[in-house]
Length: 380
Ligand code: CAA
Image (cartoon, rainbow, N blue to C red; front, side, top):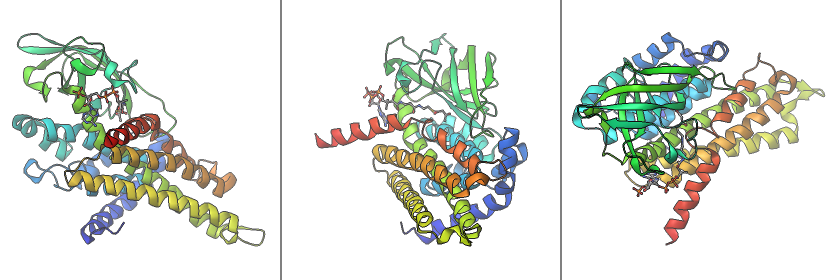
């Protein structure tokens, strides 16, 4: 896709930062299993935590396509850093920006833009994953405040977050209809982290189980209309899925570039592996899947920036990019052979990191449900 020159400038700027500051640290972040404080500070200093926040609230005021380029370029070196920024931006900043009152925007966005506060999104529960509408966390109206009780699972940035977008039922219903959204400060008494998951990949990104035990939140913590929280969640995930698609694209691109350089240099049977047609065919298929993902992601981002519907397109971008990332990273290990299977080489990390992109912010099966539902609706 031919991008306007301004996007090339944005990409070049992020690429420089990512290669200089993130690339050399990626293996260590994966090994240590946490997001280093100095990396968070550098992301904040460079404006990357407020990229999508308007300038009036202290952000860089970039559009969603630029934000997608940011996640792609960070994830090309380190998928943990990519999802740290993505969960903060698409899952916490965006719903406040889109559904928040002026007072909520003024209170939260400047701190989220500067990195003083980190954001997360608490929708899933032990028994409510793909069937998000069946969640059971309750928010009870206590007159002058809300009281939240429940447990949330698989919360990206759960360890670092100061602010959580929390979904809870304000009316007991068997389905999504009683769900409301809240902006909850994690310093509220009764909020705690139950555990941090030990994961296959994105090991530098925290994934937490959170407890809400009589958490008292002010009346003005309600985000959007009461009992319309499921719409807030679904609309937020429409944008979030573009972010995860961009993460998957970055992972695939990083693995491809590494493996392609490897086969150009690796001599077997008296010549570089890249001279073999069987290897070239593999590279061609990898490159084509990456290009297809990129087109879908930029297209979905452009629709979002133009204020056009993009629910189907974001699901298509995530489905294509995540399944391509899994395929491309598998082939990248194959191209690097025994070396690729070891932790001395980065391709096994890309492979482990790719898997989650087929699961979080809606599994590939959920993306297919969204795509099919939209296609069938469009036929009516
Ligand atoms: N935007 C706005 N509203 C939407 C919407 C959208 N894209 N899609 C649906 N809705 C609304 C509908 O209009 C309807 O509301 P009304 O009745 O008021 O009109 C309501 O939502 C229910 O719609 P459906 O009947 O289509 O919903 P459903 O119950 O059949 O669920 C689903 C559909 C696609 C399976 C949905 O449950 C879903 O997306 N599940 C996956 C959840 C998910 O992605 N979880 C990831 C959590 S975040 C995470 O991974 C952790 C992290 O920290 C990164």
